[in-house]
Image 1 (spheres, rainbow, N blue to C red):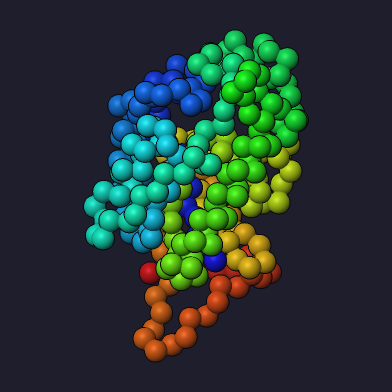
Image 2 (cartoon, rainbow, N blue to C red; image 1 turned 90 degrees about the vertical axis):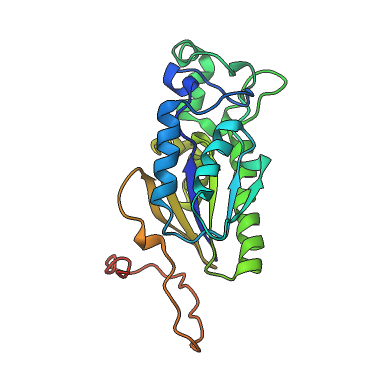
Length: 241
């Protein structure tokens, strides 16, 4: 199936100040974040993208615009609420240094599948994970049907959301997802096959992306389906381009 490139948004003033922004409107990239977004857009330019799917929040949409820049043709841009930030409820807009004193903090750290954020707008991390994973799989199916099984697309989202998608791809329980790190404008790539997903990159913040470019098919030759088998011994890596 598809290869999904997960990109976290660039840095914001809330990130820099240690504030949990959540779904607060009007949180934009700061100067550092704009530079990060421009750099990741340039890094990924060699990788053909059939579409860019983004969280509706400003910081992700601003990052997504840099993934579209310089591409011809320009991929379709889709806004998807299900890859939006976790709804942190009453924790929203509070400083992390004060939240660490809350009893719920230990639950978020050690048993996140049971964590539900307080307040009428609060969401459980398990619910966030379920909606995000469902969104990726739905877009896999939709874009594979439109563009073929080797399609590659990007999803621009948030740290906890991407961590949850990676945990699902690795077959990890959500309670272990705090072991995963997702930095601003990092690249995480997952290839989905009929049998299992393969995590190709995780929290990649620099370097060559040629290994994410699908192999060229010779004219007249039938496309070989992507194998669901893992290579015993690790294999030779991606073929040089």
